[in-house]
Length: 106
Image 1: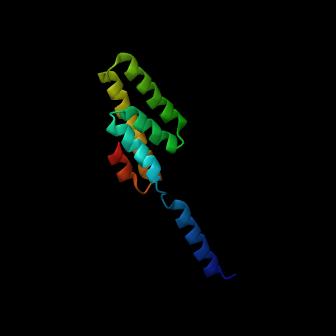
Image 2: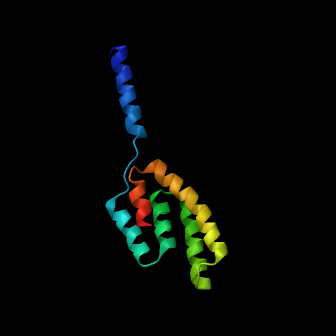
Image 3: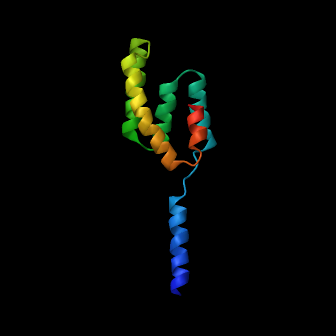
């Protein structure tokens, strides 16, 4: 195998590895359905689960539980959710090429 051919194969392999994947339409629909019923915390929790980020998913789950307990999204919970959203959005942008579609569904 020639050196130039090997370089080409390596370059193509690296490009494939670096290509962002797309979140499935099914998962985007689940996110949109949660959002349409004003269940924004569950929407974000599902997105975090698709990312396989258990820590983030558990954090949104905790906010969801507290939201139900207090029967409102308190300013403190809202602030925590905004901080979590920064991490969620950054990870979605890095992992999925259709991140704009995902975030508009939230």
